[in-house]
Length: 508
Image (cartoon, rainbow, N blue to C red; front, top):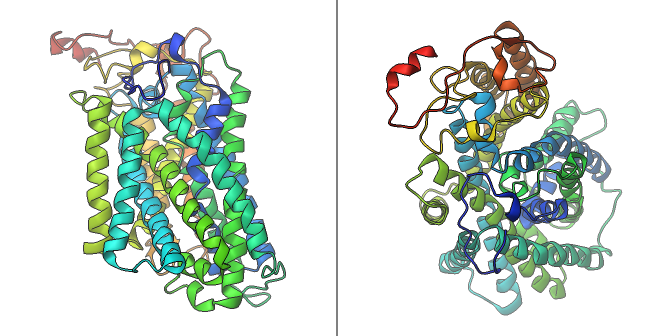
């Protein structure tokens, strides 16, 4: 991470040299918190009210989802400092040299989805606030200009790389937090913590609504799982693991600020402008502007601008980085520009041509449902390997080599892949998002969406069972041997350059 602030980062997913790994856990906190301390998180915070919960019930669901999600996320921060690369590359150890593309694919979809959500929500807030404040025409041209400004600014920051992104997030964390705190003064007179919600006592929809709200909150921390290594790889390997995990955990706990802002303002909107929280066609941004005092329009616009920058950079940076490893002909900068350009095209086409602004939220939820089992496999793999990895073997795919400790069967570890495919597929069957997407088995739990906890549990049990029934080669575990499972004396193909004869692959 050496060099000036405006020096373009040249590192891809190769192991970061120790001399350049000068970030601290605090820097990880700033980037992860900055990426979630945004307007898009406020929108998620409004969901408990949209589901009919009271303010206190909604707060309980929010805290539950936030704590559980942060606990699931925190261990994923360990791979970056340990291996000096991103989490998708680290997943080679558990899914195989070629199987690591699963993580790359999930991070790509997640990034495009959340980048789109952040640009759309922030752009809508900026245009709406400017319309109320200075009479800016509320036209598609205005929205297009706002979206374009956000997208180009985000792309510029991501091209410069981690150091510039960290600088932007240092400012964004403080500024956005201050603006959210100003909201206390803006809405103190209208806020009523006794807001009762719309569900009657004993309503059979209470638990489905409560759990559904908690899972939506939980999905926010989980969405960072594939990206944590993008930022933590700059932290020195000898940094205490407890500090690294604490930074990731606290970065999500701190998002109680935007979640609380969204929850509290949604309860005000429900009481004063209920049309904006109609579950059939919710418009949180419009409702917020409708109940905000005039002097708070400028802070709303600033939150939109800062939030769009933070979420967009944390999403797009990691995807450009990982895309350069899947297609080595692209440098990190070229890959970032390519993915950013595709994302911008999707944002405009999805908003103005196909009207996908509602569908993309459902799409993001389904992606996270598939990402959570992948995270569990990574965590269990870390435990069974005792945190030991071979950095050279992790880079086999990126160098277009063959063999190594993580080659398994022609580059695929069917144990991890099977556990992920089956658990993710089963979870998708149980998804229950009324009015958006309901899986074939979504109604079996009385209307409760159990997809995410089911996916987590099945992934953990199935992966451990496969490791026990079909032991991995002893060499993948390092000198201390396996934990919680056993190893097999299976020969491991040595790392070979691309020019080596493919005939030696018969060993696998």
